[in-house]
Length: 282
Ligand code: GLN
Image (spheres, rainbow, N blue to C red):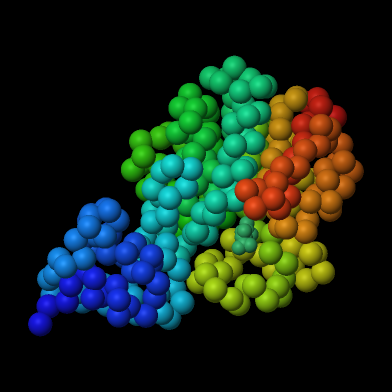
């Protein structure tokens, strides 16, 4: 006896919302159509896949990895367990970057680099919004870069991808804007073994450095950024909920000016940065 959409949602061990998301994908249809026709029957293959995906979700696997995609800044990105799942708070970083790009530069002229691009979320959003930007995106993980490249190709944006441990492969290249969502969860933070984070690449989440409060990568980026910024260029990065003050101090100590900190949509200080006053002052 075949199962209807409504029956599957009713008996599902995960929420109706998540079950519906899985069905949207399996049936290649909209949420509206699913709720309008709960009496529709699934064929054997669809039902088998739906039950298998529900089981994976019951086991704790993130929805984004089961579906193989996540929406970020209005575009659907391919995500695999090789990349961090893009999060809404990172959209704040994209917005801050776009705001500076319009203020500071003729939109065509700016060179931008996204360090540790993962799925490519930040670089691709900037490229989508400002197609004329000259954008470089790096990651230390070749597997992550492969996902980012697929996303760039799928969305038809041009980005130069470089496999690099932060700035190490960038010689003397300079940029007008450096953006990054680096790993900033502190070594041993209990959240690393909870929820979705258990399934994400550990190197995308934490510096794994004891006694650094999760700031090891942020320190390194702040230290090296002036060697790669044009005069009046900006460094903007995402950080943890309790790291804003420490980041401000690090930026000030390195000589950045116009220090800024922007809260995410939940009101948590999330994006910090500063302007590098002039070239040659390093
Ligand atoms: N915002 C993520 C989290 O706490 C961490 C991402 C990161 O380290 N850049 O779940």
